[in-house]
Image (tube, rainbow, N blue to C red; front, side, top):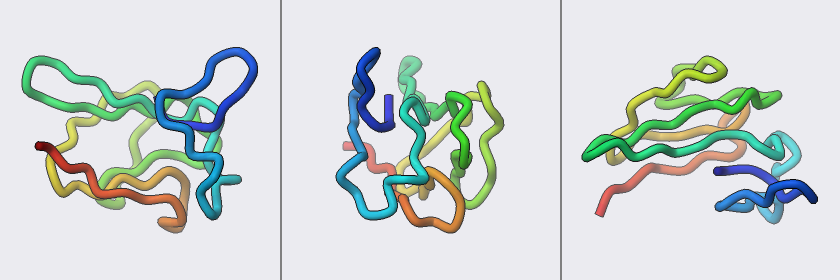
Length: 85
């Protein structure tokens, strides 16, 4: 899970130390692996999850590929490029 730590469930990837982390929800998004495909799911975040500038609806699993740009929140303040080995 991508997000910020809380007392109930710490995320697998804590983002609270990043600049602009205030736009990231405590439980923002989850990356799932299904056989050889990867998916990102928005967990009901306040500011949304985006793949290549396209919004991911709450609860939707969107397939992601190497070099896709993932943004947590609007305005690309917290972004990363998804890379496969």
